[in-house]
Image (cartoon, rainbow, N blue to C red; front, side, top):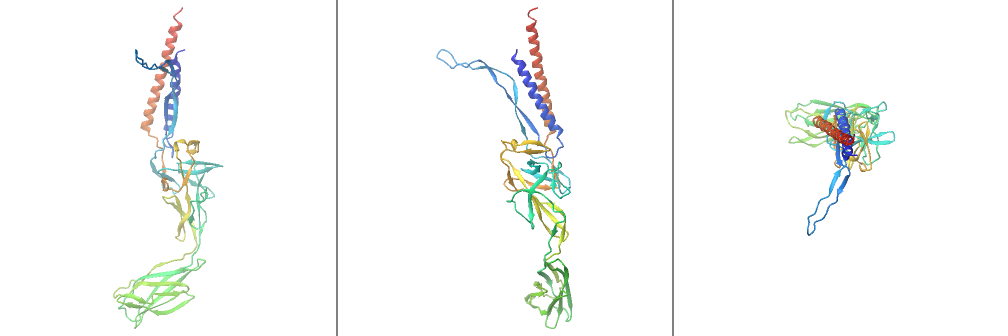
Length: 390
């Protein structure tokens, strides 16, 4: 049989696989987080027809004569270049800007993906489109420990931000030095006890013949008026007082003429609050927003990097699993150790380049046709050979 028949068959098979890969790339042009594949060819064994001869005194050397036996697919490589971002406006959609993979758990198997189209299930767990659990670290009292073991990310439905007792109130602004005697200014501020019960703390500033005085009450406790001393407009005496266990700081108050700008500039403490929503920080932290205005971390998403991401094995559903040549996963937080940052409200689209894929389609088609011509021509030669004797 002619060697060209074997070469033609291998060419048909290789270009058919190229068509398969190209077709799959085009089919996934709109698949979130999809990475295009590329086929690499190499020749197969070559038959040695004539050995090489070294140069001699009376004759020059000759090269070996070899006839190739066809082509084969050397490998199918995955292209992990960044895909284009697509804004979605959904808080649970996330995109990795840079290197890295989301870590997900499907059953008892850990998988990795670039597709960040996530949702919360009925139990508040962050899941992929096919129900795999997104992995990371849960916050304890608003603190995330990225050195701990991975767990399923869960948004604590009905989580409560604990109440905090008010311990300090700060005032600033100016008390008018030229105010008439008997002038009274009252400033109220809401303060909280250990259980988050609110009460009104009222501070009364009174202009006397000797200057300004301040006293306070919260309905249960009363602090008598004490004098405030100003020197050239700066407070030099009576800068603090305590009302019902709350320290009132007046050191920023001034005493110039013609200005009455006294106001409460700050206070701590809060009532208890319920979790209402969350936002995603670039470092992968899910920050919960509570009804009492508190914002604190509730979880942090983990990312994984690989020494050879091209060695990952596709597991379907836009996920990958570790293979013998990918290396072990290196876990970390977004933005550290070469890992990319996270963008909330957006998805990474497929990195398939349609212009390149259609070009590859033409190349594969023509390659297939050319190899079929090899088989046709070889068949014609064999037909002539068979017909030599009639």
